[in-house]
Image 1: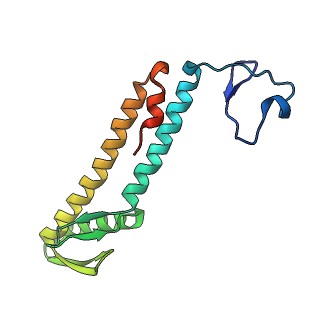
Image 2: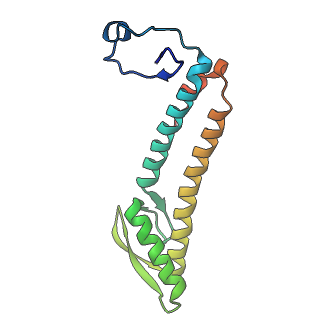
Image 3: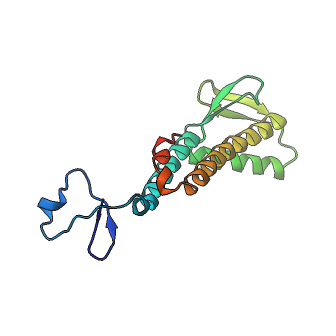
Length: 154
């Protein structure tokens, strides 16, 4: 990171050497207090990516009577919501065969599918809640405790 004459802080990659690549640039020491918002934002972005990836990787549920691994990428989240809506709108639907990652199509009766839907929502909400807890922890970080941000892992 470097600070421009007007006080703007900028980052630069490992391949940039400010004194040599930018001869008119004055390199000054950047305080931890000045770095803090950038470190906080970078860590939040990293954790957000990790959280989303974990959600998209799917979840395990025993709603069908046996433990199975279920897709939960964006497409399958839509399918799950669409099917749950169909169950809500049509009382005559008694079940559906639903694709699992480990056993192919598995039959789910109405109550099993509703349980699967609830578990999927709980799975996603638990991950989002964990991300929110990390964001709150990071927001409370001060310049003197900035090193703790780096140690936070998903």
